Length: 278
Ligand code: SF4
Image (tube, rainbow, N blue to C red; front, side, top):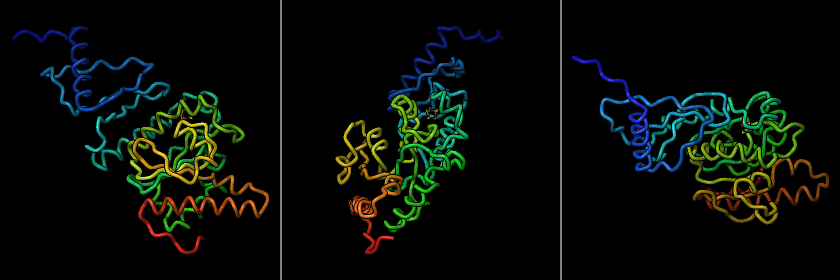
């Protein structure tokens, strides 16, 4: 019996092309670019690859070569599969150096916390000092205020998802730069795709403007619903803004506006509105 011949570059190219076509047929719309060469695909016995085969690749700007599954249709995936993919994404993010300055000053990346399929996902701006130290979003003073807002809505923190526009702390708690938000956008989109929140609540102008791609002020964005990929989005003030208002009367007014926003959200979620805020 003669030895099987080694695959040529043409063979590999044809298999890759077929693989991509099958993924496209299954609904995959994009594959992230890689700065590193992809490992050559293994030639199967039959050249036809199964349509559900995941793409194993590495993402641009990360130093990790961990495989990241890119499902063509998340609805086809079980909770466990999505949990696994989210964990892979978390590992990719932990190795991300797309924003060189932030990557060099962070203690760790701050990915996000909460269950899959939550009623609501709160999206903030970026980690602060406490979050950078603990690796969890909204754990400092602003986090305490957010916890009170969540409790005031009759929910528990562990039943909502919480993440930020950026996964690394900007030095001196400055606002994210546009290119930093752009760099982190892919992580955010993928995270939301896997978490699948039923509603989104943007906390503050930076979160709202970046998620929705608008320059409108938070004053103009709050009080009504917007749309992100078919998910209803409500925008309200950032908890740290509520804390920083020096005038007690103005602070009460801003808190009342946040409460009005939360009532809109609760109504849209079909949840009862607690009679007294905490
Ligand atoms: S902010 Fe986002 S894109 Fe920038 S280095 Fe951190 S994880 Fe990467």
